[in-house]
Length: 505
Image 1: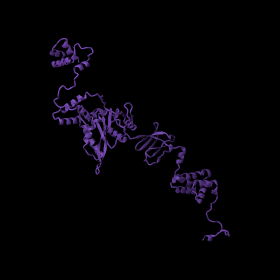
Image 2: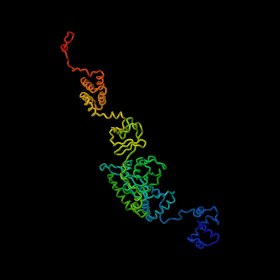
Image 3: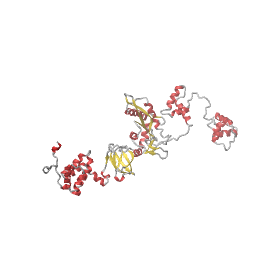
Image 4: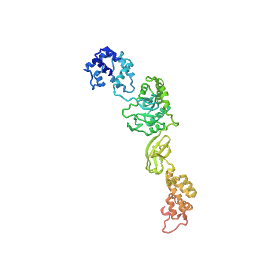
């Protein structure tokens, strides 16, 4: 607008002609001076301009129709609004839209001019923030959205959908992809581990979309990230920074992988391994052969130059997948995890605890402190108990086993051993006679070994098989009285009032 003001001043103050004004202003042809004065006449501008006419007001007065077509173009122009709308579809590119345009209008714009015209139109849209990513700073991760069809049964034609996990480094755009049957947490974590091993290092930040598998509660200011996901990131020295919810724009690098699905859509796969093999070949072309036009280098070359020196080295040990679950210890100080019960110290009975579950171990925490660790067992409804977790009274009781009972009973005497053996044998399950045998053995403290052995012998003679019978024999001193062997010790009694066996036959 400075030159416009000079053109008006030279014209109205000094009355110079178009050529003279063009020479004094410089870089302006006489035709430009003539057009400017024509526009000023149409806008009814007078000299000198008022103080209220700023450069913006002057520009609006002279060029209020700027941006509108002043005539017809030599080639038919597409509907840029429709082009912009189509570009929002998955796997759609300007190349595809130009192919469709040139098929309808063979004399239309060439591809480069087509792109220039679209970008010029798009410049008038609302602006977005352009982000420059530092080397080794961010790894963008997400599922591609669309799936790959896999034929799992050739006879029936049954199919199953494979989900495509994508990871792209921010600076070099080096890409990694992996097909999985599901989008569950174990698959999500395993794909991250494979991606980091593919890149040979870990970035400072992992940037996922707000998928439920990774983000518990999406929030632009304070998102809640899955604890297992945070643990995996911390193991590799990284942090998790999810995109903003609802309308993320930070995952623009992930969209560059869309051409993978476009090249896989017409292929038939019969296993997940075949899908991943095909993805591996396409990734090689994408990363090592395709040259990025904006930089004139491949993704692999940029990675070696930018990202690889900045990535953090991977730890020696691979991350072991672990899930966290909240549980409450029962009255028996055991925690149920997948139909198996694991002990905690008895003082934590009824307390809420957190269980860290891996493929081989179970760790239980209370307020951030690990209170128990067990080797993982199958979900058979049984218990895994560490003796140190038990109260003293329970521990003494737990030390008694069937084998120990038999050993202690044999040491007290043959009759005690025989009675305990028959008690255990008479029960449907040996442990049902456990307490009865234990009580008989403990009678030794009150009555002595000899008396208990004799009482057990008396119980065997009368067919008694309970602890109460043996205790009754000892309390009534029947262990010192000889028991009848069942035979009559005297001659039969003959009397007129006694019926003999002939009466009944």
